[in-house]
Length: 633
Image 1 (cartoon, rainbow, N blue to C red):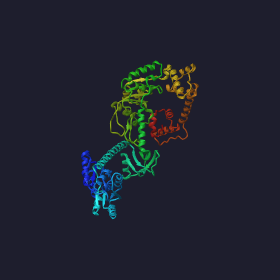
Image 2: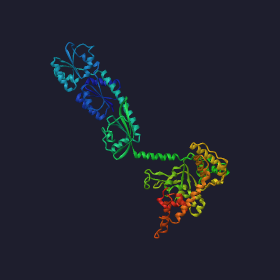
Image 3: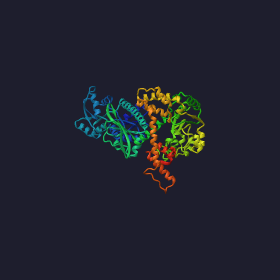
Image 4: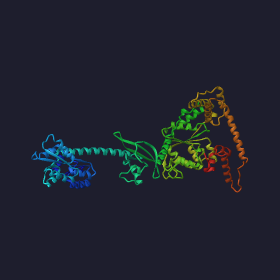
């Protein structure tokens, strides 16, 4: 394909153009003959077949091409050499001569007045239709020698005048060709720049529009194309006002504006653009508000996943007792293998701290550490938390589905705290996942392989639960390959003061208080005190002391607990001895009356799980099962 089309209106121009093409090796230029309407038709046919990017011509043919074909066109200017060549055709310089042509021809001859002699008059026209009248006027004035282009020459000869042609010399043709080449290079550079910009904005996930100051869309990306197609917006001269409720284009910058586009909400940002310091247009970016919400949720899930790290190491376990030393030494050996570990210990003894230390000491330390408390999740949700679910698996399921903790812990450690509270019906699925090292999401059909090290913790005797049927034997023996037991704080009294000092320093720094120091009397009291809540209870006492800036609380806290226990006992007695509002229906079964009674206690305690289970003497799991979806955590 030739990129430049040269339309030669005369034989001489054609010959000169062919010569310049040969000499200067202009391989991307095609040259055809044609003058005025004939040249226009020839150029149209060529453009339809070959699609050139730039045209070249001269005189009236140039004007017709410019007005009819929407391509850049270079005019072969009338040069000094052209004027001199025409001047030499004059036989005598005494006779008056008319120079007839467009303004550029007249101006070039006027520039030559200082170096050529002769009696010249100058006549201009704006369109070829005026030429006949102009030459006729010259004849009426007695002027019979007419200098001009091909059309001027031919009409002058028809009117019995002497027509002298101003033809394009090789220098003029070469100049036009070189100008066309420069335009082509500039056009290619502009196209490359435009393509670069287009590629950049096409890579953006938002719909991007660039408009001029009148709001006409000049550039857009693929996402914007799809949006326009959905909105049935015409492509040619489309305006941003057809998409967004915008009356005029201003220089104001907007951020986070919510616009309703055919019932869909979009977040719109816009920024003005400038060329040579002048406001030239505006860039608009549109993003579906739903997409932003989905991205934010995905970001949160990603952030949560990145937050699955173990923060503690064995060095963080505050102790001086030999019992804890023995547990740590044993735990370090366990950390070097991948076998499941079961950690026993009362609530508050630091089971998760020990578990995190094992993870960080193991070869899986660079992988995720995921912890879940089996007692804190409703039985109806535990399956989806463990194994995840696919999109649409159940009502209110996230549209993109959700990964379970087994997937999240892949190549890392999964810590199942209070595994004793796991419903029996879920224990078989957990066992299979551990054995097969693969899971399937709820509502899914794809098997997902997982590489997870399992560490479990319990504050109940799983062996006794297994004997009584509360825990599956096969799961028990699977998760208890390696066993650790953390001693209660009451069994390691030598650790009480080091722990108390640590918590005092930590909370003093946290709250910006002057550091409290334990005196001998307070240390002695803390040593002889019983800790039902273990380390967690001691930590709470020290935090309270820092807040109060006093140790008085350590002497009064047990009395407070006693008062609460008495109040709870009174409430227990009151409920169990028959209270107004509690009735039993003899027509109902025992199970139905039991369910009504449990719900009544649950309501009476203000939906307190701990009080309800204490009064009824049942576990949290049993309470969840009896209450079903009516429970409120």
